[in-house]
Length: 318
Image 1 (tube, rainbow, N blue to C red):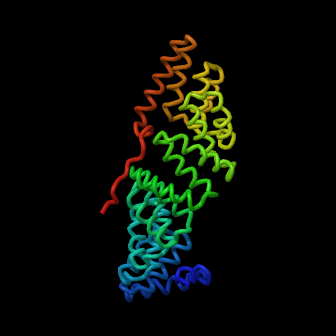
Image 2: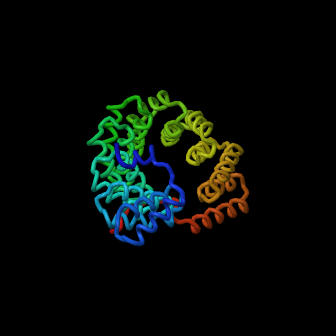
Image 3: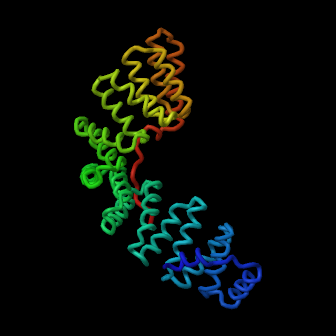
């Protein structure tokens, strides 16, 4: 059992007497590890993060080999929305306990959130090497590789995962998604159908099945798949836009306008709903309305130019 777990189980928050004692010990021995860590941990438990951080840094400097100090310091930084500082502390902790699975998973997620996809994938692969039956680690590794635009390794990993865990709807979807982006619809479809059976309330496979029908110009068969995805997640923008495109293709203008209004309400900052609305209004002969919708779409695109772009990978700052 780690020291951190022992502390979590048995540590009783000390009162002001102990706080003053640790402060006095630090005044006499400012380089000592124990009072710096104890006081920092005390402040951490009290959610006094700004007070805890400098003390934990002193403790880490006094004893660089203490895993828990680096780990808690990372949590302190994370809770203050300082991802890179948190990851630096956790990297130091992981160097001391290289096989700490939970920490690797947390770090992989944080790397992904920060667009450090190569680091996220490397950690997820390490988890897989240690725990090949950890299905969450497969998901993390596949997504990180895809985000890093390493699509061939991501697809190979996803294929292996889907074969190993055929009942896991998420893993079936991840492989189907990569097949879908390659236009391999016939291979993606049975995986998506299996995902909807294994997890009927998982909305993304329903959406992707609708999108496959849409791309193959099978417009009416696409409708129930998009509708199911929207029923599961009413503000699901890709499904709302997909269904709107079906109605446009079928020249069902009122239904298209209704879907685009729902899409605009779900994501008022996204330029796609007004852009499609402009097409609908133009077909209805409302040139002024179409012009206003196009201008709104262009204004939204200028305000947030990165909204339509895939997240770009970047190296972790040294």
